[in-house]
Length: 569
Ligand code: DON
Image (cartoon, rainbow, N blue to C red; front, side):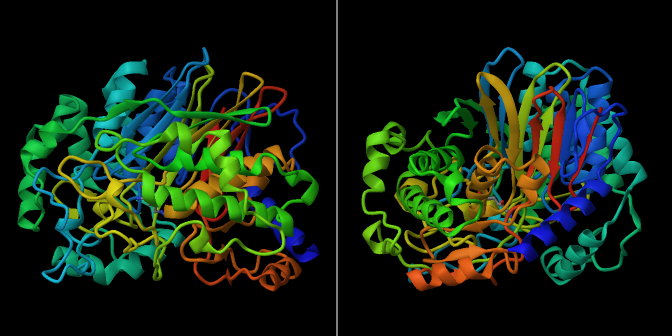
């Protein structure tokens, strides 16, 4: 335990020293705190994006102006997951307490069919839903940022996008992490694109990359508005490119795309009110289910990452993920029994066979078969503005660089979100998630997501904006971060840095970040019959969050697992 604590403290120190602090007067004790700002903050996966967002706020823009700028800046400086060719979800809470959710998830093309990823024997064709043209869903991001900015933003679009256009034109510096990812994807980039692209192994960490094609695309969007991407020159170029690469997306698909406002999922946990994303993301419902199942247990008393705490959380997670795989999908296509799934009676019943003695067998929760999975990338950012508006946004291409298909004339990667559908009942996607009819493919349907952008209130006041990438581990990472603050009294920075574990019903194992948990606790879990997997992933989630402190200042939690940075004033 001592070793873990030492590691944690060392990490806090490293993270704290690397945070950008633009605030001058800081009267909060912050030994283990992240970056503190007085009024406003943006936390994202790249310093450039956080800074551009924060500068927009300084100019008098609000969280929704900053959203557009930050999201587009991530597409420039963090092409791994930042995007124009993907989609995402946003949850907001305005300064007057009103809340909402925005769904800019990709859709299946009109020509999509239920069996499009199956061969003549009915087996899933490897890689067809993950790599190249056929993997791509109709992108939603540009529609999403416009929908949010047009409704709530204050600034002129051109002023919001200009710093991003400048970033693309003048370039951004490649980090070590980024270079490693470019290098390890070099072969697949070349294979999918048939030639070298801007991002490969020819660059080095510290080099400056200019993306002139993306600067020009963004300039056209700034001049012509959202229609430029879905109907204009950009749309036509995109469709011509996609069709040449085997995609079935048409101009009509782009014309018909529109982001949608959704009612968020809202529930209480102790004295917190949690506001999170509703379907077609599973995030809010699963988080609701898990938190309600664990609420009767005294986690504080058991201790942070202690045996009983892990057991209760894991068993609740198992049950929620089993429900996810069967009941959840696009609410425009299926009926989701949300009320029942999140009702106290149902959730108490779900936990009736829980015991501290041994794991509940997975087939007594539900059934299914599973093989391995891998982890890829998404990105999250949180913004709180000087007016008191908060947003929480998770956006993705699905896998790192999505389908790996790069539209070089336009300067961005295309998603491989089609893999989030259930290609065949019971057959897992890249995150090991299995699905059923509820998440089968249909034209214009949105694929089920795990993205969990979340806002937390305490006593009617804004407390936190939080979220993370991590595929199926998103929900459980958001959960642990909230619990770290609420139950275990960690600061925002400590809460995002703390070691994480994950269970998703199938496979039947607890995934743990390697070397970060108490060995005795791991042994005790094994003795009780749990399978522990410490080698599946180096990290679980890359959480970013903002916490409002009791003195009204903002604390950023920028996860040390990535290049994430908090900037504010
Ligand atoms: O929507 C989803 O749940 C996935 N497409 C998210 C992918 C993701 O988080 C990848 N990051 N590790």
